[in-house]
Length: 341
Image (cartoon, rainbow, N blue to C red; front, side, top):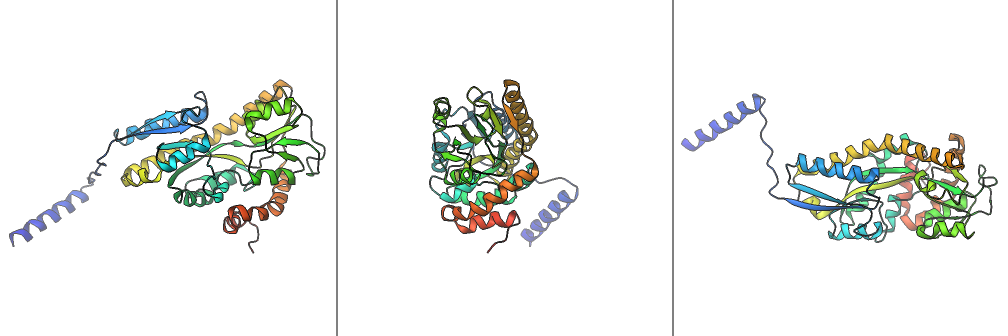
């Protein structure tokens, strides 16, 4: 009887405590982690600054339970290797492109041409809970990786020596351009009228200089600017919005309290939110630098971009079903308003 009385007292005391507007304290995780975050861009880049700010916020909001040291410039390895290191837990976190080394479906996580052509479409798809975020996040879990937030690096384009004949109508123009060693990339640039050549990025400059290639593709305007000495034209094709990811080893994610998990996701998303306006201005700044240097900058109209997208979706996407699976490609079709058969 006495025990029941005590339990009732405790119950009503707790009820009064809550009704008074006083919150019950959240129990902190009984751990103290020191993690390494790898990213491949230089230390003077916006990517580095945002990773550092992310780490500082996580440390503050977890009361020092999670401390993250940022390693920039690829000092822990190239982006393909780092993906594997995070999967194994040898590196705790990263902010970089995803590699499809162990799952070809993850090609969708980096280069799927013309999933969208406008920034607003991309922003809705990339946000936490967006259709690209959810689709790729599920695939990452199969690799032992937790995707925290999808980080926009910039809209892609192509540089060439001279303006390609018939580029607007996607006619064959006999221009050989360097493309990334991805099947989706090769097929896309064939559809757009070029002759794709899978030259390593580190060799692209010399290949253009020696006449082995006429141009290069694979990144935003800041990449195009790097080729200003050997190229004369930049065309903003918007074939993809280069996606980086904040990622974390899944086992380490599972050891965290729900509170600390929410801190990581919200802190990463905060840096992503700040990146959207920044990269749009950054893209324009580099386009202006190209103009100032004497390069011709071509910005296709919305109608021209739609024409590029329509052709690639109809001709290239069916060929990617053997690489990514029909289910993945059908999700893309559904979300751009195409018929799914």
